[in-house]
Image 1 (spheres, rainbow, N blue to C red):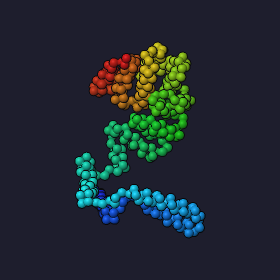
Image 2: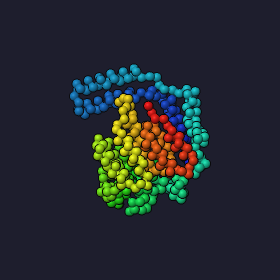
Image 3: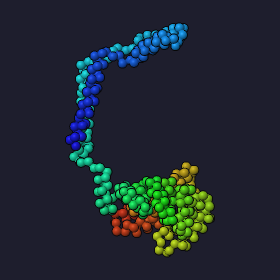
Image 4: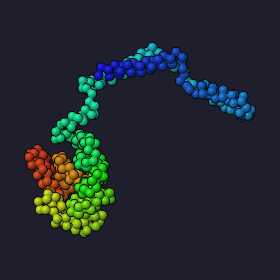
Length: 361
């Protein structure tokens, strides 16, 4: 740290010295600060040189010489007085040059942490790896998992966990990259294809894009009973206007799910919601706003399906469904969240308050 402050002081002194030296030279020479006069003087000299070498004709030399001379006279008439530095101005300049590093030092001492030692990234990474995983937030966990993937380049499992951490960090694109890398190692794993499809959906704010649909289709090629892929592919058909076909696929999926499967309430609520038909809206503007809100809520639901250990996300999801007036999905999400956080009274209280949110008019 002492070496750092010495270096900063030397650099600040050198910069201040350059400023003062330049100011003293300008004051001593009486520079006008106008660069046009030397320019036109050089032009006149160049014209004479070209004429002496026979590169321009005599009439061209006279016209060019006259134009350059005219510009030189105009610039001379328009030039301002030479710059001078009064004693007060010099004192102000010296004070400003000295005050800049002092002010920077004071600001750093007030808001910085000069007593802390350096923490290289490698050292922090070692600390994160030594800490219990429950004490790490999602970005730090992602950093740890990135280092693990480098140590185990042929194992797709660290990449799968990295994708979960990236998703929890809010970086769906990074999650998709990790999953694609994992699929290059294990292209026959349906769960990885499903996770890739969900990551692409989250990146598209809940929309079943063609890329996401292709990933879900690859999952079904590996496992025809892949529930997540079947659900989202059917939802994509419903969003595309094939409501009857999509509902039929959802009902078929519901029949295949075990009775104890926690996804059954969500699927039942979705079937009931679509079967009820489109809801009337008061205006086109309201339709656009509701569609945008619904897309964000669907994206949040998809993210929680990938990384469910997010109490704040569950609270937002329950409140969002309540605001949208979707009581079935609100209750299904509330039931899942209460089961997950049954031993946390604070989160249960927040979920209860979120469920009581009034639907928007």
